[in-house]
Length: 115
Length: 112
Image (tube, rainbow over all chains, first blue to last red; front, side):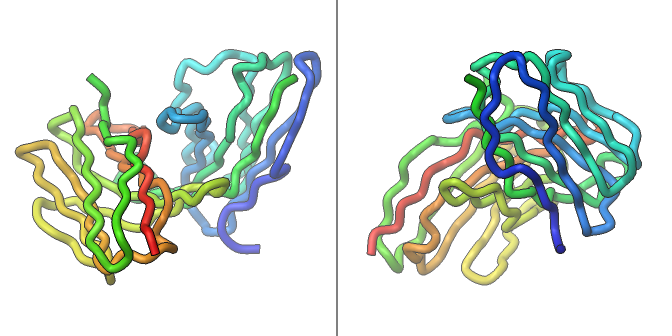
């Protein structure tokens, strides 16, 4: 495996369900990110982890809960979501140690539909 | 004022023409600028980064940065139908930390 791998690719869940999104990066990068992409809107930063420590939490509702057990893996735990949470959820990684100058490598995304 | 602004398009150009994509940003102290390409149904892919005023060329792509005008652009020479995608401008503001601000993207359509 190379790059950034996200699973599942598609997810349909009810508002009372609990599910998790998984991301794994094989690039030796130091930082990992969760972004939300809704139609016609810019990517919205949700969480950033640098060397397993959360360094950004962008006022995300508590029904989204991130977990970073090591520098290669990132999870987004979902519970009691709302229909407006339906979107493309993108994981990304970068070489940054201090929020520097590197661009991102994105995973293929999880298309989430909340019914 | 949006932090990073792009014309949503679609921008339509004939095959072989130069496509010009523009982006303005609000944080005057921003230091790092990126262009991502996103095909329909796919995730964004980094195609260019630029940090200094002037032009940076990579193959058919040229990124241009003017910090005084808070303006960054992407030129695609000899446009191909395979260049049809949404192009996202992204800026690292000068606030420290890891946040990168994205524009909503410009849809480019290259007609064969």
